[in-house]
Length: 274
Image 1 (cartoon, helix red, strand yellow):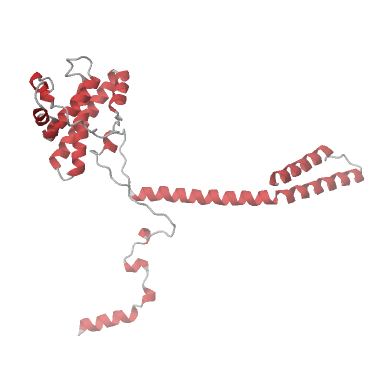
Image 2 (image 1 turned 60 degrees about the vertical axis):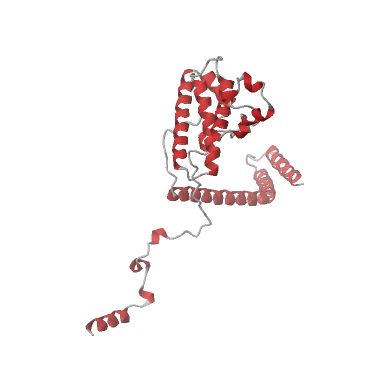
């Protein structure tokens, strides 16, 4: 009974008009603004995507009628029948054989001599072929965590080699980027998180600056519209001052050249409007 009586006494003195933001527990500083500003968090691009890795093209279509990499130099296969050639072609080979053929073709483009298998250019070309093949697979199987980790490691390894080549041979570095059609994206010097609070501050500053420019432009147009009337009043005022000075016999400070200059300015302004 005592508890019920206390609750009724409190409810008697508390009314909706007495409730304020301070007593209701609401955060007044976190209220949404009335300004028409909308911020959408930018989409996070994974590091394995071509937009982040720097690959400007995907793995090209390979001619499936050519023999597998292991049997390209086989003389017996060259003299074999069409059925045997088809069985030993890339059409009936597993996918890893297609990947091997792809990055072997890329190594042929950049290698320094026929026996080059370990130069920086060949390593980067080989990794580029594997990266593009894995990126195509990741589009089909995005839940493959193991392939994702391997792909990220390959991209980081290629960036490290590109950084080394850029420091020691810049001309060859540029030639390799152009040949393999990739973009070198070094890590930023300072990492900066994209936050909602800071972005809203920038958008608000931009919004206020746009309002300021719009009002200045409106004020400028208003002054330009009133400029002919102002020039006419200035001409009458200058003529009145000159006539008064001449009648009083004092030194004339307003010359005819000044009045003609204002008249010419008025004529030019009227021509521009036409």
